[in-house]
Length: 232
Image 1: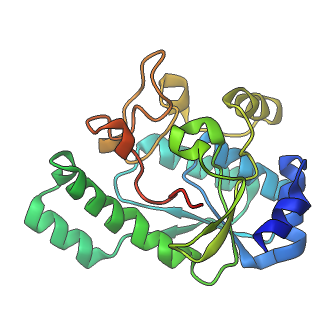
Image 2: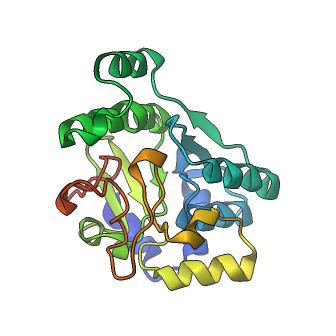
């Protein structure tokens, strides 16, 4: 099936990939948005294609105020339902009660534990039962993501992932936002190319890696939360 999808969408523009998924999979497709600029492009394309894909976001409880701002603007602009998935209350209570609110700074293991509770487990609930998972991943976002493919099998979650913007550059994304008047997070204008939870995200300096502002206190090779793992 992966090979067939790759064949079918080879050379297609992003909007045509979205239309392909809409026609072939309909409501069996799901899109995860964090309201970053790539995800805003995908949301715009889903609306344009009148896709029946479900849209969800992970409400970790640690988001920037600016993320809520663009969330509201997106709802106002596109009138598409966006389902919020929250972490398990008991798991969060136990984590904070035993390790405090900032344990993720203390070790990679603690940070991954927090990511699992706030992001991975809710994600697993959000994509369960769907056949296609649409994402806003681009190949040049990090070295890890260059090893991905525009279509791939996610073994951990047992789902096919499709990245319609995989071959887009940052300039392509920014131009699309400008031309189409797509709402976006104002933090992107303040040096935040990748925006996650507030305590774990900072602005980057000129010349730094795209994801240098995520978990900046850790070794570069460990800077993925586990939502998108390279599979061969």
